[in-house]
Image (tube, rainbow over all chains, first blue to last red; front, side, top):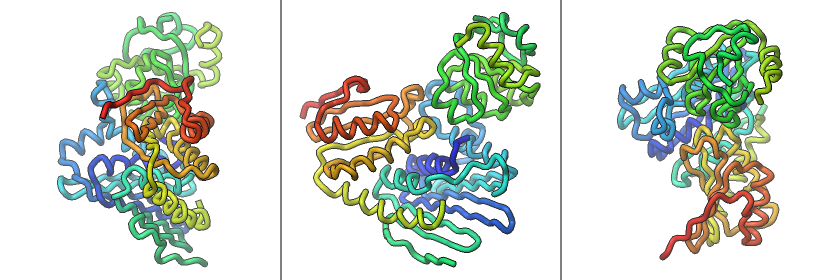
Length: 160
Length: 109
Length: 123
């Protein structure tokens, strides 16, 4: 697991880039009323077939080659964080249909890492491939914030 | 040092692997990203974590032995993965602090 | 993370784009795979961007690459020069990152004590 959730987000998004995504949508939803925090990273990359998805979910770094490719470890770490914090983990992918990773966790769980420096994570993803449209949708019970690297203009901001 | 020399003072049980496994140092940590970043090869890793990611991280870092503290155990699937990955796993009833203390006394660094 | 902090994101992203569009003397590539992130690569990148901004250094593009498989050398930063020369720095922390910006990017002097190798490509 990582110390901050924003590091998990960065890590998963790097997988999206490796899958040649041209659009990455990141959403962070904080529901204080129901005590849930939901992270989602969705991309339009090449996607994985059932065998590849299975390999990612059952990540094993037993050889040096696998270590180098290392696509699954980050997914396994996020799944661990999510499950340790009373949440659920879900990954959906199909060839040509992109990949969607969803991790939920109890907002108030004592082991839940802080969201952390989300800005730096988004900036790093943008720096990785400037042609990719990186979108962030952040929502709490009262506020929401949208960011799109292609548009570079926040939309739909609302404040209490 | 071999695991054989340490099993006694740690009151440890060998869950998988060989008692002849060599270790040349120790690392204590429960945050996997920290261990991923900082542990050296061939160390004995002291942790309370029992998630299967422990085996992945140990394998990636060439950590020879994992010592699970507070009497916790790995599930059978994780033990099988440890065996496949060549990672030796011990379990001790001691806390991480006590285990680290005992290991420090042996001169392992 | 609060809304006020998030609002700075657009500002920072625009500055990053401006850097890319100017003539580049150097390209900084930070390795950002799982082991890089675990070792603090994001903080290294942030420190370099902040230091460059502080010093008004504009002829540098900052890029990010995926897993390079050097789990014991992370964080790894590679400096690529317009002439083709490449210098790789290993185990970079924020303090070393700052030094790389000041010595290598601003003054053109490699930080030999941290550099692990350089490759010059013939045109």
